Image (cartoon, rainbow, N blue to C red; front, side, top):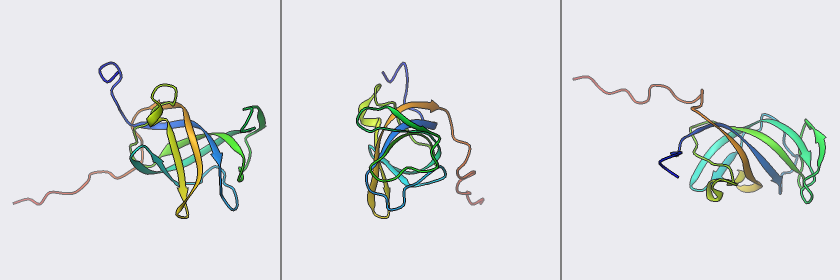
Length: 132
């Protein structure tokens, strides 16, 4: 409902990520481009909470150093620029994303929860206007 809960940027979000095709795997600090709906924004994997079985959803390992192809995990992500996403359970089109790197899709995911608020990084000031 846009009146009750208008669209706004998120500072971070938690997502279930399934790695499809990544040669070495990845861990915290990895910053690929996320394609969510029409947005293409770089997001940093700030932490990988746990590795899980992608079929049953059972927890396999807490705080893994990296996840490899064919594995699934629950991870915390932070966008580099303001990004409007929602939890998959609230609004499905804004709750799905693809992780792209090396000109191919390396992983897919669904957003479990979002942390609303403005991000701290990014550009400040913008373009300066010329004084007359």
